[in-house]
Length: 187
Image 1 (cartoon, rainbow, N blue to C red):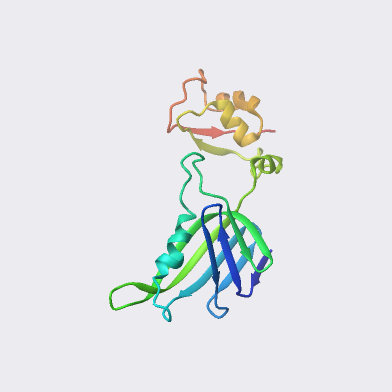
Image 2 (image 1 turned 45 degrees about the horizontal axis):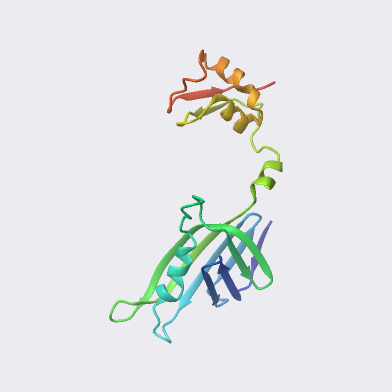
């Protein structure tokens, strides 16, 4: 379901970065489409001559930095009026529109996309999005095992024998990265 909300006060934030702003309604669009939020807004500091990068853009881009320990970007809480959305920032595109004579950007258009964050426990309870009754292909990556591939595709690690048989694999411990496997249809 897609909802478009009027412009207003918006807050992006994680524990160490908070970006507050009031976005002009004629220049801002917020689209909420089930598990994705898209915001297009114009950031304008021509009247105060403040650098739009320092005021907003750098803070927004910081929300895309990968956490070295988690190997993932931070989970962002996005608030727009009474709407609260938790997600991961997928993209942040910036177009600078106005500069001072010294080249300092004063105005920018931003387009931000957030994808809903869902904890692993909830993801595991979801029904599979792929069907085991359709033949597929899979490219082996380093560290893959037939049982892991079977668990990921069919949600049943015990189906690895069907994959081995369909691909004439005699020794399942010798999977070469880059090999293309045919994942058979299950009956």
